[in-house]
Image (cartoon, rainbow, N blue to C red):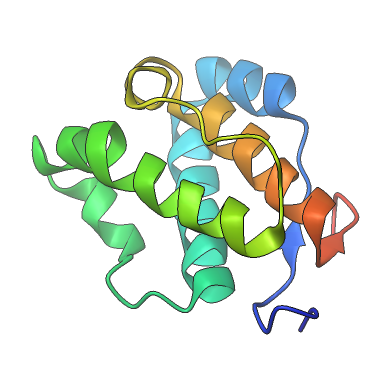
Length: 116
C-alpha cells in the first residue's frame, strides 16, 4: 500500500510492451488484463473489470471512453501532473498508452520495479 491507500503499480517499458504485443498478440492481451487489474486495485474502483476487454465491440468503447477516464482518476490520486492519454491513443496503441500512463501513476506513488 502507498500513502494514498492504493495498491502498488508495476512499472513497464511502454515501447517494449507494444513491440512484444505486435509479435505475440496473446502477450498484449495478458499484459492489458494485468494492467487493468492493477488500475482497479490502485483506484479501488470495482467498475473496472479486466475481462470486459474480451467482449467484442464493448472493448472498443472501454478503451476509447472508460479507460482514459479511469486512468485520469488514478493519475490525480497519485498526484501526477500529466493528464491521461486521450481515448484515440488508447484506441490505436492501447498497450503502449496503458503502460505509459501506469508508469506515471507509479512515479507518483507506489512503484514496483519492473519484473516484480
